[in-house]
Amino acid sequence: MKWLTQMEIDAGTARRYRFFDSYSWHKGVWQCFPGDENAARDFLTRLDALEGKFRVWLLSARKPQLPEWCPQENFFLKEIAPGFLHHHRYYFDVRANPVKSVVQRDAEGNRIRGKRIPIVDTEELRSWLSRKGDARCRDPKTGKEIPGGFRLLDSAPLDISPMAESHFRKKSHSAYHGGVQFRGILEVTNRELFQQTYSAGIGSAKGFGFGLLLLKPVN
Image (tube, rainbow, N blue to C red):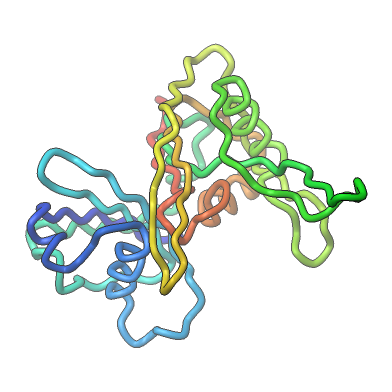
């Protein structure tokens, strides 16, 4: 990823553009990339609800354009320096969608497709994030685990916020994601793999505003 963008709009403007849930915000962010309606998503977002306004973070490979809903003076674009991801340790802040699969069985006791549910227990959440450093995801072609290239710094506190439901409606379908904010210090164990993690994001529901790592080098 090459560009980090911060956008802010007041609550009244958000209502006027009908930004009522994570899916409507997702569609709004696509305005930053006009002419690419059929392109695959190659960016990560995060929405922070502040007092009387909203802040949108956008991490993208392509240079975004100013969307019609964001005032020019509230559009902050920064090109990420080549050496930014060469540090050993970072303060991090990420809002993720931690889930786990629960085994379900039919009337005869046979295992069927598992159901994914949000993780709410603090220790389970800590373990979930720690595991992402060892295995961020599975390769869709080989099925092998792809390491995240980092580990949590045990000597530093890890702040975990309570799970907050993020409801959305897509066509006739209503659902929600469970968002949890993690803040702490991580240590890079493999620079190349960590760069991939930074670009790909952490966890599921990345198209709905989850998984973007906000980083600050530890000096």
